[in-house]
Image 1 (cartoon, rainbow, N blue to C red):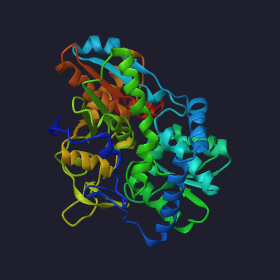
Image 2 (image 1 turned 60 degrees about the vertical axis):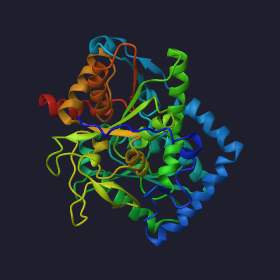
Image 3 (image 1 turned 90 degrees about the vertical axis):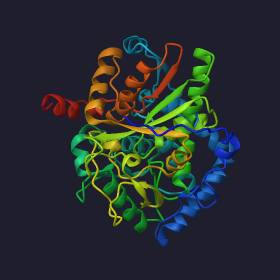
Length: 415
């Protein structure tokens, strides 16, 4: 795994990080609002509703109540003692977002946006999903709040995430398969945006990725910041000091930016994002590692790092994990990569599947294949570190949904 260097981040302060994005949605040269005119009005309406909600104690009270009573926060910070012993280096902790209701970090953002939709009087919800975790989180909240729910999902992702498809339908959602292109996450986003353009008056799009047009990267980040804040207080209680490094997988980037944001100004804490290396990063279409072959461009509403060819056409991507199989990365990640504050590497399918099995057999915890990319890096990195160091990996989702696909890929089993 090749990592970008970590530069001096002493210029990043709590005030400067909280000032981003700017009023036009930019993180330095990244981000922005590159959308059809039809979507400008609902985006401005969302902006007004969001800032009004942030200032409304009743909104925050309802959000806090549901985070505790429905979602199950706070999630534990778990010391992986057997994994630590096996690796023989750093003390390894796992932030257990996989233990939240519906099985992943995605529900933090979905809940916040569902409450915003209710506040705006929107009765119909649409969402995209890759691995299905954002889809089931959205479907569950729509069931609770009595909202109509339509989930767009690539047909290939529906095949490899069949369990989550059924869970969404069981919660009352309509799941619409997308047959275009690679039949994965990018195409699901395209179809959801087409739906939104034609139903802007009645529909709110609960976007699950920390990318797209302003102000989604900010909203998604803000609703996910809670588990980075939890981690800070939990590790101080457990160890009396901050960790030496935080690790998270990076697809669109929602779990990673939520996890990292609380620590951006702490220059002593290394921040490492792990992308999908697929079959290897040397061939087009074999991976989804944007920082290992991407270029600056615009996709689905934002300027960021994208896997594209010289003519600007989006390249094919691949990952064993549906949630990381995407051609672009969140603009805030692109910004902090440009500063050298967040370093990025990748794990291959083979490494992620090995980590999936190792964590299951060592700690009795089955991780999502997305999270397994972060675990793969953690296993290597911990062994390089001294026993007096602390490494925390965000376990962003549980692996129930991936057992069937992992068995098919690794053992040829059709469960």
